[in-house]
Length: 251
Image 1 (cartoon, rainbow, N blue to C red):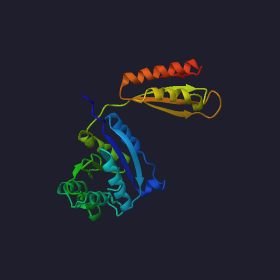
Image 2: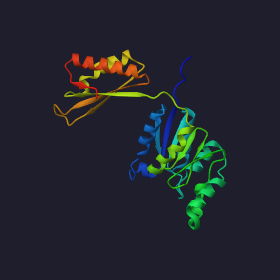
Image 3: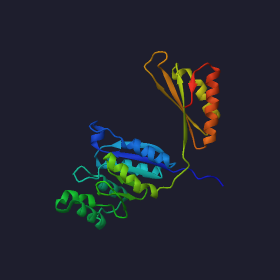
Image 4: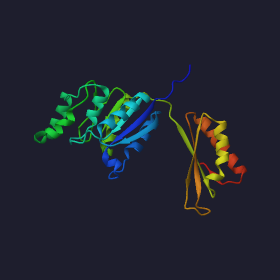
């Protein structure tokens, strides 16, 4: 029986503050690591501003192309928090206040529960809440789309509630070979030859250094779902580099 393919995913980062450079995004890295540990392939990421048509177009494209889509940003209490509106329109559903979300927010804010904060209780029809253990204001899931906060600590906390809802795949194994003293051009042919011979694996080259002999080098990364195949390829690559007198180690 053949193994089913691993699920695929995309990330949609929403917010003018990201595109303007005012805020540096770290959520993509967090989600990538989260998905990698579950064997889910993150294949695409997009960043869009707080513009309704742009968000809807990107969301519809991504949710039709991947098993899962994760959005961050735009679910707060201010006028430019439009993600819930966009998601509801993309799915063609209403955006009513959810009684459960209202209760959570009322309990959180008490006498300070105003009209702005009430906006965060609007959940697309058919959606389910994503728990927020830090500030209570929930995210939500509808279909294959998971809508989460943009604040990194809150988004990361929401992932705890998301994880049990996902179909997992085989985890990707990764090994790194550190090559020193030469630039990546010196190892390109060797790397390409092995990549052509082992198409079931992924090979990458990531240069480092200040540009002087002894400081330059490249990290060669071998990735694949078969740990044994990855180890074999690393040994073959080390042998090929050694035959050319190129210093390399695989920590």
